[in-house]
Amino acid sequence: MKLPKKIIIGSAIYDVEHLDVHEAIGRSISGEILYGGGKIRVGPYGDHSNVLNTLVHEILHGVYQEYGLENTEQIVQPAANGLTTIFRDNPKLLKFMIKEAKKMRKDMK
Ligand SMILES: [Zn+2]
Image (cartoon, rainbow, N blue to C red; front, side, top):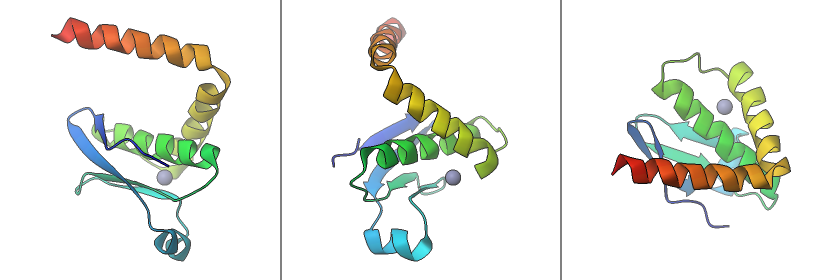
């Protein structure tokens, strides 16, 4: 599965990489974000919903960190689960959001 190479969250740029399967199992994690090192690491799952949820989850940790919000699993996990189901259930919404984001980038130039 090909992941995006980089994700920009506010002023932070994160390299995105796969989390080694042995490390993921050994540490019982599906992903992680390294704020100082600028990395988002996602577990090597075959299940697409897990990858999407993990990526959204780690991105939200990055957002909460970047904007100084309370950055706990109790807050991030339900928000990530909710957003993941919104992305899954609303493909037209995603297309709309991509279009609007392109307009925003164009306006910035
Ligand atoms: Zn988390």
